[in-house]
Length: 348
Image (cartoon, helix red, strand yellow):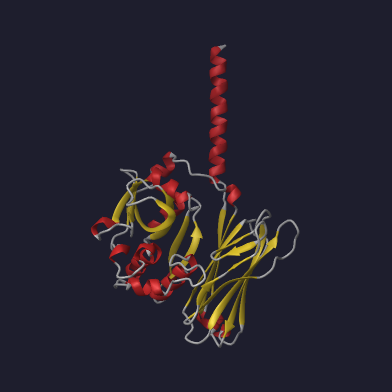
């Protein structure tokens, strides 16, 4: 009798574990990109607006947009978004996301509580999922649309997001370390708000790595400041200027990564990854209650540590930080695995 109960509970446990594993592997985030070729760019030069539309895609509850372009010397670009309601089969209103040029760099907020709304860096669909999106880029004041090189839309269904289980498959991923990434402390940057410069400092480390030449972090911060959000950490402005700062050698994308395996795959391509963490991170200089951006440069399989360059360190030497994978994943998951991904242009 006792033996039968034993195997009964073992069966329940294995069933539960299998369900957890299936839930973990269930896709919850998807990246859609449009990169303009040379001939398309030439055609775009004479246009007043561009459209990037995707229909019949995986349903999503949130959309994050980013672009790669060279800032127009005359006029500015305006970016708009709308999404298609999966249930009602109707398109929602246009939301103005961003104005971007030499004289203006501003994100916007629109919509009402409980309804579809755009909040500075993301579109929230409310209590109903969307299954299509449309991006519109408008030229203002003679801004040349051939300067727009690429668009990225990351969508996610947060109802499918699950904390990652540390399986043997994850823990046995091979060690990887990217050499040559500089160490930069945001607190050593000569800037009155250097305590708020984690995102531009992290991006500066990656662009330094790509260009193999120093980056002025204070100037980088000036070029990413969001006049709408009143922050230096606005996601799309950081990735947009990173593209400019490396002279177009890399596309930079704001995206959510499905799992640690996806982050590891990016590292194996030889590119460091900027990630957003939140809350307590074991061994960090402080608790990141308001979120924080740092650069992941490697994974140590033997010691089960994520190797990072954390700009919150007070000295250059201390920027190199190794965080336990369990603590790192928990902090990254509080930001829903947000990342800035660098993609060398020769991949396209």
